[in-house]
Image (cartoon, rainbow, N blue to C red; front, side, top):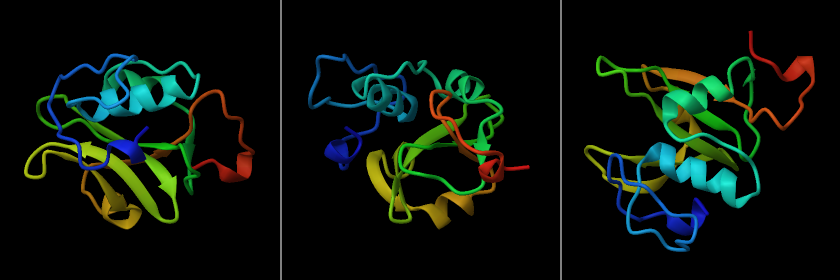
Length: 132
């Protein structure tokens, strides 16, 4: 779902219906929510709720499907996206891009508000993979 929508427009607060195969626009949390839902997994709406849902599941190295989060800014709004493998992640980002884009994971990790890679609660992982 995320790969199929690279290049689509970003719009803060835009909702995507599960019936929309090719949404007209969405924000970061909406695209990640829909990616999980379309894979048959529960995942909340909103980056703050998504991060709370994955709390305690921070990992050292991401696997495809693992979300990343940015810490909230002064407005309390965080950011999220998904690792897709091969050193790449997909995010729906606002200013200045306003697009769903594929981005190198090192650029994500270099962001000053990068909070880490996490794992969806339904995916078990050994202690050795957990971040400190």
